[in-house]
Image 1 (cartoon, helix red, strand yellow):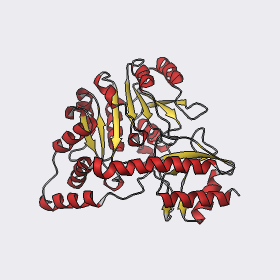
Image 2 (cartoon, one colour):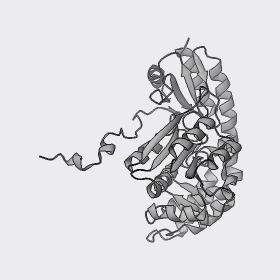
Image 3 (tube, one colour):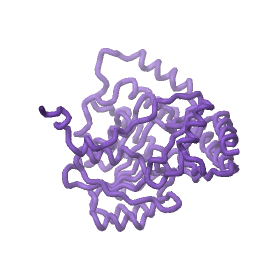
Image 4 (cartoon, one colour):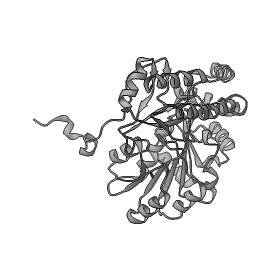
Length: 356
């Protein structure tokens, strides 16, 4: 009798599903979230607007007012913007309209595992270039690989998850000018780097930029992201986005967050950057650990003790981190998100005990 799973594409059956461990802890430093909740002012204004609208009606088919706010915030034209149910949805949409059998995606590893997974599910071929010994982008190697395989889409995460490395604008330009394909830059953590590649959109029509409200904006529960690209690329990508993909609650709160970003959210970003520096310095004082400098709100840490054991010991102390030792090049590493000052102090103290 035919097994029902035989109807599933072989390339999908061979994949390991993207998943997180189910553990919970009082100090949660495993998902690169903003450690502070959305400010009360944003919550109250959002609730006021939601109370005033009809809940029996669909949200806007195209969230034009949100696109206009995003255009003002990001300095890009609204015709080149798509808001979505998290940036992951939009990464998937771009790959859906570009990748299939015989199409190639180029990534640099280690990086966010979903890029490879989506490309494979769509039937594409995935090639990768390793980061250098310092866990930074090897731009020369990427250019060489582009010349060799001529990828249809190259995906870079900047700052990169999980290593935190960024890419300089001149280096990115050299890649944009070295390929006939698209170059997609995932800027989920750009606010913590205090730099963005978005200004390059004006001159490079093969650049696509993804952003999210889940990290610096502190709205991970809402699942809001957006894409920026040349209008013609955005128009074609939108064909792979489901109707009414972004609900009215998310649309409304995202608009409020953009309006109040400078006064309510930017101070949080500044505090997280300061805590990142303080956490890095604290980890560097522990013999047996070597933290890697990061431009994001997390960092990877090299450990003389197996990362899985560090994970278990911290969990016993009610602290949850991410074991990334299964990623390429990271067999000796774990990743920690930047928490509140109190959470970071608890983490450093616990690691001092473990490595004593």
